[in-house]
Amino acid sequence: MNNPPIQIIRFGSLASTNLEAAERAIKGAPEGVCIVAAEQTAGRGRLERHWISPKDAGLYFSIILRPTFEQKFWPLITLMSAIAVHDALLEACQLRTDIKWPNDVLFKEKKLSGILAETFDTPSGRAVVVGIGINLTSDSFPPELSATASSVEEATGKRVDHELLLNTLVSFLNAHYDGLKRPEGPDSIIECWRKRSSYAEGKQIRVTESNNTFSGTTRGLEADGALRVQADDGTMKIVRAGDVTAIRPV
Ligand code: BTN
Image (cartoon, rainbow, N blue to C red):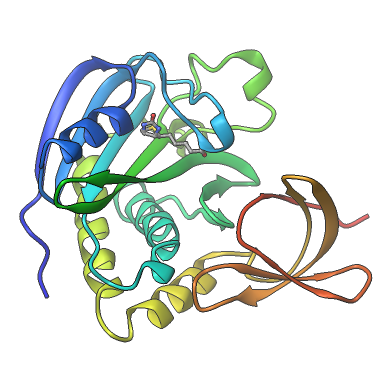
């Protein structure tokens, strides 16, 4: 049941820790290999977005996983990773955050961390690379980001101990991934996520899908982590991909 040992490989600068991890996974690197960079020159976000990654201003981290449980539950890996980020920030920085479905960690509705889980076919089977970016300081944010993004330093008023946060994150990832692999894992990850997210139930949101936008109220998660939303016209929608934004009550 236990995970293989974690190996952390550090770089000064990389295009993207996810790409480095993917290349290594394709060459046979085992589950548990982690890539960390002080800066990224082509950091990748969801939906083809760019993840701004100035030197030492964020934690830029990717881990290789080789899950053997049913693939229909793999979307829960993103939720599990968001839980690990939430728990690591609480323990290492005494910072309580919120989780926005599926993969954003927020402080006062501003984004503090994002997660990009990508699958890659490798000679020894399909691997998942989980990339995590945590904003540590807002010093080098471009002005257009400051309305929507925050950093651990801005939220706590304290310098962040990078090593402590990295080690705490790795240890929560290990523990929650171990939990997810158990037979009751999917249900318990959903329960953990619900407890940490104001978006799980009763939140008014706007959903933007590839060719559709609607607003509604959240009504929990499906067994595979998809978001249930009761649209304003009364119909129940299941959201598996898309962007969610909170609608502020008038
Ligand atoms: C998102 O919210 O859009 C996901 C952002 C994920 C960013 C991290 S930083 C480390 C890893 N390497 C990347 O290129 N992206 C992820």
